[in-house]
Image (tube, rainbow, N blue to C red):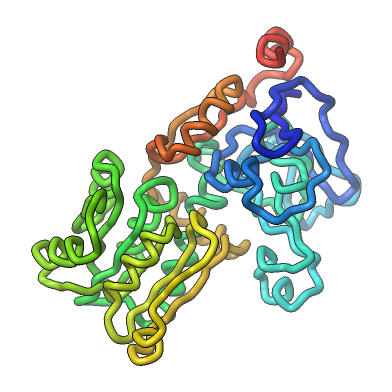
Length: 367
């Protein structure tokens, strides 16, 4: 099979032809139809995460595809059959810790994630524990399904936290920082779950802001070369308000954290899902005196993904997808690194052909 593998940090991925993996009795072999390319894949390659990896590894944690084979111990109650279309729930917990017991396997201290050690979706086939698969309607496209396991579900969980904090509702103003992969989904969830709240998007790219507007944003502000006081005045001219009731930060850069903090009012709520920085610096007195609510939100659990898939099935989610050929993976990793991809890049594999039919293509991309 074709696989793009990482042999060390800060190196291009090696595109090669390797043996199709064997599966354990409780695993399912998934033929990958689409694999989302996430900025965290770039961060993995660049050494951002403190992981002890046994190279080579295959990145890719946003995975949609079809069932190719079932292990001998996959129970009938799993309701999986060869040919079923599935997505991979990426948080694989140990099943015994308190987080796993309540369904938050992505928070498990002993857990793992495909593409961060276990084989990921930058390959034609990937072995997956059967209980981490969710069957989906075959009418949904792989390139749209794959991002819903991270980019399309991480902000969903974050918006749910803002709602639980009481920060959403009529006459409220919720801000989305960032208008790339996560941000365009966050806008849609803010409208779906916001209870009538208005949505303003902050980003530095007019094309991305235009897409956010098309996804339902009420207002957009280009923050390039603007200080917080400039942004505050522009916010006032657009909305009549100089503060934000709620913020979901899909960037997590020092600039977005500082800008968001400067715009939060008393009892304002901020949820961070982006990881562009390494630490937070927030003013202490406003945090205490204003009873501000700062939360982190990591990925999503199985139930979150099921809820998002239901919204997709009902046609309530719009996508901005850039299809990527296998041989163009490294080029698109560099585009991701520079922030130059509009929407979500998704590696597409042809699930209608047998791997042997593409032997010539394998030779071409492996050199």
